[in-house]
Image (cartoon, rainbow, N blue to C red; front, top):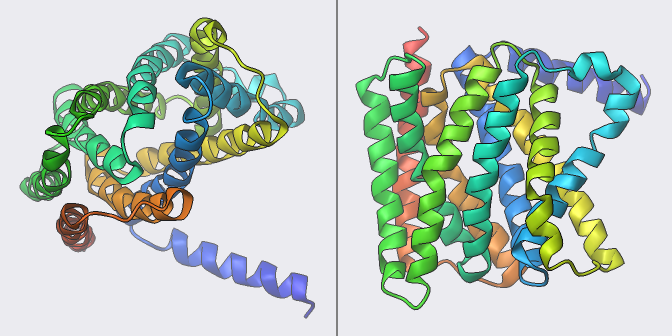
Length: 305
């Protein structure tokens, strides 16, 4: 057996193992993987937003997200990516664009771990919306996991509200319910659209809606900044693809506790990219979040048997 054949065999074994897992576990793993991609993406975006205008960064990131999908579009043909619910795709893009505007305004003024921690208020809004608008059954243990995770977020966020950047912390908080609405629309779109179609149309719609503000204070990026933007397009597309796959397999409310793991990824990325050492409150909050995540994962597993 050649090395190539050995790698292919291992990959097939891994795929078989993954497909043999309970559906809710596979959905949660897809969402956890999306969180890792988004954490690396956010680190790159924060670096770019410190160098360029925030809205230019927002527009260029989604422009590159569209461009990296073009090879797949050319290879597979337009018919594969034609949406069945164009109105839903536009609504999703519009809501996500509004959330991103708030997020990018605050991004350069808040640490990466804290930015991620603040975003974890979103699962509360997602779980409420899933119960009210999608008809998902809200089990008590999902609420407990979400509230435990949220208490961990409060441990992280509360000390920052009294600082000089407290106003930007509130702006970041304001983006959370809008992102939650975007994710709920994504869940509904997975009923009629492929994950690739959702990713392509999100990038396209957000790029178009972000164009006017993106050009307002345009500064030509350097070659290395273009390389970084290309990486953001790839990472963002991978992250949204994994998220859509996870939402397709499992209830969106069942996956939300996994988002709390993003704080761990963000703390690592903040240290590697910016030399930020997590504070004591961040470490304590992350520990609470991790325990909540492990607990609900075990609960969801036992529910399958």
